[in-house]
Length: 88
Image (cartoon, rainbow, N blue to C red):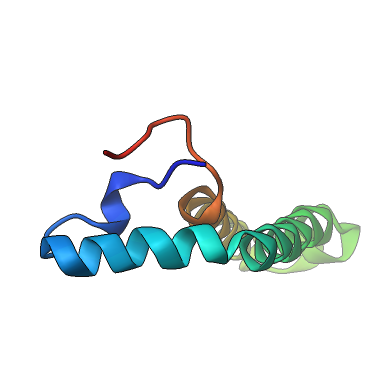
């Protein structure tokens, strides 16, 4: 299991080591959280396709807001998911 470098960037060695250990111990919780966030993103995509929203004069703003929300969820999922890059 790999940890993304952003988690330990700028940390002192001891704290970085603790972060790595805590990251490894939280696998089950991180997987569950990633699934919950993915479900929220999927619901947002489904909601954005609702025909009722097309009648809203602020439709474009709503769409932009939902895309930003989905992008933020995606970034969080990436941070908590296993990575291909290994930290030494």
